[in-house]
Image 1 (tube, rainbow, N blue to C red):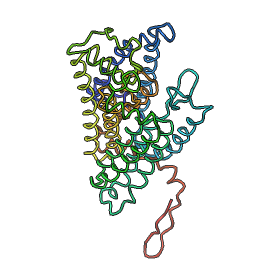
Image 2 (tube, rainbow, N blue to C red; image 1 turned 60 degrees about the horizontal axis):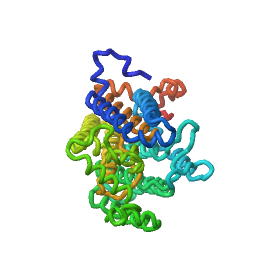
Image 3 (tube, rainbow, N blue to C red; image 1 turned 45 degrees about the vertical axis):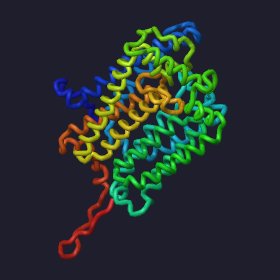
Image 4 (cartoon, helix red, strand yellow; image 1 turned 135 degrees about the vertical axis):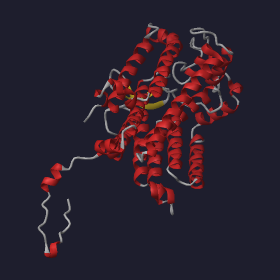
Length: 415
């Protein structure tokens, strides 16, 4: 396997998307600053060390960047070959999480498996596996999906989505379900499935999620608090109302780094699910615009990279890039929407900024894949063919070519 970065240093723009690298580094740097500010009071209360979360987050970023670099070295056609094989593995892990003696329950949700030094949230890595499978399936069955004389080509990907959604709802992890289903439907639309048929799928998904929301009283209370969070500001609407107060306190220029009052143990999960509210408090409307601009830039780069791969007929690569763009876009929108009380409260991190090892590593892994898509799309047709072709020397040595039969005709040989 050839390592791209072993080529001439002067050729690095060919292998690395400078705009993508710049926006990721800016988000990581800004994220570490705001996460540290938002977590000081919580860390001091928990362990007496105000920089406890910072030290762990830096370690997660280091691991994530290392994983991203290693993923960048792997040819994308290898992912296409193993995507379907990874589905059963991740399904088993999602089932293991539900076992009380193994899965760790935090804040009423059982989403983590303990590895001693850290907890792994399986659902974060499930996103990548699902999107890799979708990209591979759509590359192989793109024509059937575009014509779609029947709904049969849609059944398999929708069944996969349904299985994962069901397992995630058992944890429960409603936020991840929304991101996965939204991204899956968006990918099918890009794959050529008619909008009217996707509309039917979307309506079914909305009805199913609505029914699920009515099964638990706490979920109904969340919807009620979303409609009027101030009606029970000290109860079900506590998080949202405190987030709104933090955003309102920020004004145009913010209260300054470290100046937020809500992060002083008033706003729960200030360093995680509600980090955007603290960002708005300390950096104001200007900080909000800069953050949204950075995410818009990131998503734009993902789609540009996907479009270049699409034009070179590297369809699997293109679908991977589009999926990552949709995933990060939807998750950012949903996180910001919850903080602004525009959407019902759900546990979703803000990519690159919120505290969390699994989220950080999975997101940076996706960036490694995206950077690899850029690299392969910059290759010439001959270079790409040479890169992706499989060695058949050993197979050819085992093939016995039949002797010539009558009138010089040869039989076909099969491997």
